[in-house]
Image 1: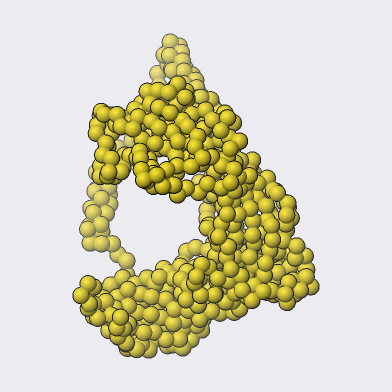
Image 2: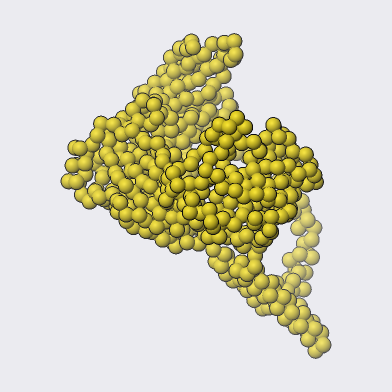
Length: 185
Length: 208
Length: 194
């Protein structure tokens, strides 16, 4: 075994060892560092966009308005049935949504849900408001959605009065893209 | 020049493999052929027949964390109506008591623990859990006396029999192997056949 | 055929060690409940559950219970109804399971509830009242404690709540049994601003 052969083999072995150590260290520490999945799971907002438009999950969103109401009326001027305890307020967010190419749209339409967020990190889920003039979900047969065309929708929330001054905007999240966007008014 | 390691490796290779190359190839070929044959003939599981006791109702016995008192069974037929086809179901009447001395926990009786044995190579039919005092999926409390309950089996509309066989499975309080990170605390699992009960069965027709 | 070279063996051993370390380092995959934090309390005490609270308001004993307009359900033991209220904070609360335990180690599960078999939480800033009904062995009541066990698996710190229901011994248990009402009607849930 001549010395140069030996040296060559030793170098190969040592560099292999270093490469393996480096890969293992990277895999070990990846969990604590900027792992997209962990960041998403922790509930962090990934982008903040003022009003929009912003596209997430092949749907383009634009926040049109965010208004508080004491109660909601339907087209016949009758009060819409919502669980509104004393001291709470109804918030209506209106948005223009555009389903983009590549989005799966079947007989159930598609998912267009936004949560209401405030500056303290509180999140409120939208409620159904039967009879509201605008559709509150994107699978409504009465309001068909067309690809690449913007349609107006509304998201209805019930929040305590004290939360109104803290509201920042609506949050839309997508698990596959690991993104959460916040549209502020 | 080769190192001693290399020389020894070469010697082992020569003596074990190279000199008996043909025998090795024949052995491997045999194993492969055997595997293929066994695979296509469905394995060699011997038919052991029934390995649990068969008793006649009425009877009381323990099975895992339950004590069962089997009383009677009924085949209930519903005749064909304008909207529905003819149907039949089997209802077993039994007393169930929670005897879980290990965990002393309230629990429901899973449908898969009580089976209607149909025979003829068919799979047994699972029950739908225990219905007691008119409520389904009754929660049995450890320490309370047995409750009188019924359970239902869906059967073909032409199902008949005057002495049906019901199989009862017993869970055992075992631990999992902690090798891949599973907890080693024991829990009720590994249900095995414990008893088969022959129950005299009456047939009635239910008219809506 | 250099299977037994020292360096090869060392690399193999190193891999195994690092693999083991990596598994220990990822908290999501810890199945054992070694890091459960338990908050203890009594009836009437608001108990912290993350940044939400659970308060058990009262405990009632009854010989039968009625859910909605169904027929009353009776028992050979006794029904223990626990009425509670939750106040939802900002953090996610996940789901939880409710159970009763006694000094003898017996565990009882809910047989009926206002909505779910655990503490029910609603949107941030709102309080929700609910009720849980357990069927209990009247001879095994000493040390009756209400437990809420959280069911989330993706956080390292899981939190449970344990409420002493004020039945320290059999004598008190007997008093409660003697004064048990014939029927308990499961109340409807009430939501209000906290």
